[in-house]
Amino acid sequence: MRLVTLCLLKKNNQILLAMKKRGFGVGKWNGVGGKVAEGETVEAAALREMGEEIGILAKSDDLENIGNIKFHFLNKPEWDQHMHIFFVRNWVGEPKETEEMKPQWYGYSEIPFEKMWLDDIHWLPRVLNGRKIEAEFYFNENGDKIEKFDIKEA
Image (cartoon, rainbow, N blue to C red; front, side, top):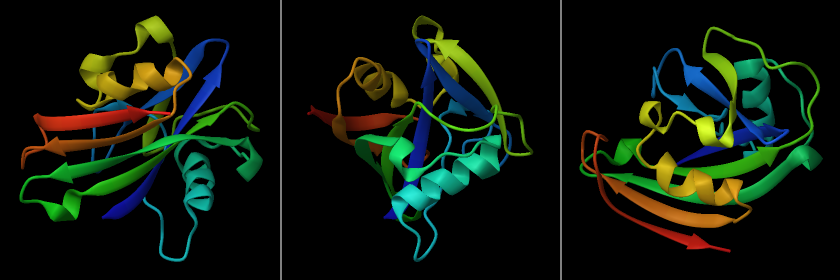
């Protein structure tokens, strides 16, 4: 199962989402993050990805671990992922558009769930309301339908 990160920048009751411009998830709005490289910690990957994708700098102390989700895809184990999720409230620089991502701030009531991954509507409101989560989602082989899911709150 591939290790990945997801960082959600927060300020003034807003969350930063970014539209993926290429690769896996193109056209979808999501937090910032990506694959953990061999020999890299989850935290180091999260910090690196924020720099690469939206041009900001943060420190390990700025990462608040708010949970993790395991994604399973029927007959496509190469798509399976274990995602570690972080809130980020402090960083240096202004989020900017890159070749990979186009960032935009959203109020909590404005989040474009219809343009995001199918699972986001099930867990994102929970973490925005202060809960930590551990979840598993099972998708069909195309990744366009959730077969079942389980979310535990801490």
